[in-house]
Length: 220
Image (tube, rainbow, N blue to C red; front, side):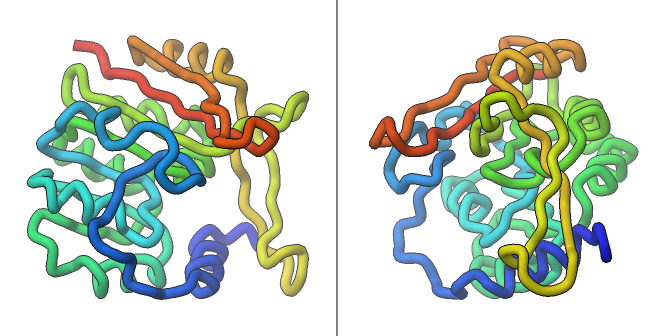
């Protein structure tokens, strides 16, 4: 039995088809192509950090727009593949590491980002009580935090466990944190964020699962 984040996400990454995406790249927050807002939620930053970059497409997209775009992902498999695909893009940087550890180091180095974001990524899978103070520490004044993930299942809130590999094979699990938009607003404001906007965007077919999209700012 193991709660091993790197092994979990390496196994996930090995199961993702490794195909170079068609050009041009796009930036989106939802699980539906072409649906919902794009990079405008980040407000034209000069520097960005993605928490859990996965395939690395968002980092590469922003770098091609002239942003100094960094991503951190715990999976060595995902990091290696992202570097192979997009390491040639000027301004794109892919780092391997656990997000809280990475942010602690960045904070100690006084590195600040105009925007920190997570698209169905590490923010969903990290205790916000640990993560949010570190995010705020690494954001520039009035910097943007934005993230998206699945809405909470009604009546099921807080920390939840997930087994990997579709319930087959060795027991390997992770945790994720699910809250209502109202709860996310309270949590973010409690950690000093301002101008919080948290809402569920309906799917193109309202019968399908929507997307929770949250945006907030660091204070002055």
